[in-house]
Amino acid sequence: MKTLALNNGATMPAFGLGTWKSAPGEVRAAVIEAVKLGYRHIDCAWIYGNEAEIGQALSELFEQGVVGRDELWITSKLWNDRHGPQDVEGALRETLDNLGLERLDLYLIHWPIAFEKGVTFPETGAQMLSLEKAPISETWAAMEKLVDAGLCRSIGVSNFSVKKLASLLETARIKPAANQIELHPYLQQPKMVEFCQQHQIALTAYSPLGSKDRPARLVNAGAPVLMDDPVVAQVASAHGVSSAQVLIAWALERGTSVIPKSVNPARLAQNLQAASLALTSQDMERLAGLDQHLRFVDGAFWARPDGPYTLANLWDEEVG
Image (tube, rainbow, N blue to C red; front, side, top):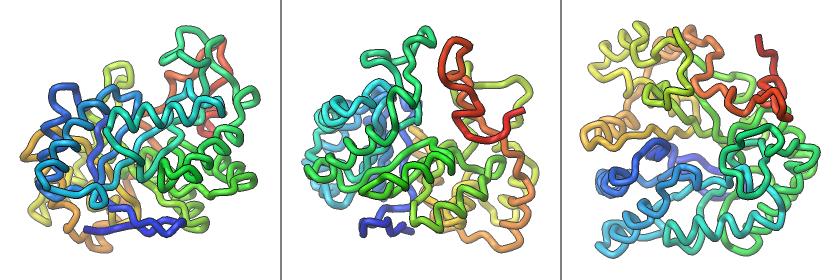
C-alpha cells in the first residue's frame, strides 16, 4: 500500500475509503468490509451525517481484533458554521464522540466558507459570513490548538485554492499537512499539484471517479460522464481492468492520495486492487490530454446573490 509522508512526520495511506453519500444503514457494513479487505484510511466529515454509524463499525473492528486503532488513518472535517475560534474544539469533540475515538489522524477545514453558528445550510446569504468577518487565519489558529491538545495528529484544509493556501502559509504556526480537493483527469489542477509539492502539502483527490452518484442539484445538464470516457476505457482495456481502476491508479501515480467511495463489496475489492495497478508513461500522457478544468462539485451552491461568496472568490480563478 502506497503511503504519503506528511510535513509533520506522519505517514498517511495514499488509498482510502470515501464516505460522502454513503447512506445510513449502508456505511457501517461498507467500513467493516473495507477494513477487512485491507483499507486503512477512512475519510469522514460531520456534514455527511454518518459518523456515528462509522463509529459503530470502528468499535466492532477494534473489539474483534481485526485492526488496532494505530493501524487506521481517520480523517474528518470542520463544518462551515463552526469556524469561530470558540467553536472549533467543540466541533472536533462532537466528531470524536460520534466516531468513538480519542483523537483523529487528520482534521480539515471543510470549505473556505463560513456560516452563522447553527446554520447547516444557509437559506439566505445573510446567514453566511464573509472571510473578512470570519478570517481563516483565526479558524486555523484554533485548529493548531487541537494539535497542541493531542486531539488530532495533523490538520489541513479542503477546497482551498492556491491563493488561499499561500495566504494561510503566511500566518500559520503549523503548516497545513493536506488539502483535499476535487481531482480527476477532467480536473487535473497542475498549478495546485506543483504548489503543494513545493510546500510539502499532501493532496487528497475527492470525486476521483467523477462523482456520477452526486446529488441531482449538483448535476449540470450536458456534463460529461468521466467513467464513460473512451480514452479511459481504452487504457482500462489495455490493462484488463475497469475504468474506475484506471482513475484510481492515475491519482496514485501523480503522488496524491485518493478516496473513492463505495458501499458495494465487489467494487470495494476492485478499487483496492487498483492501488497496485501500474500505469505506463504513455497511459499518463493520454490521460493528461483529457483535462477540461471541469468541476463536478463546482461550488455554485455557495454563490448566492445576497451572499459574500461567488465562484470567482471561492476558487480564485477566472470563471466564465
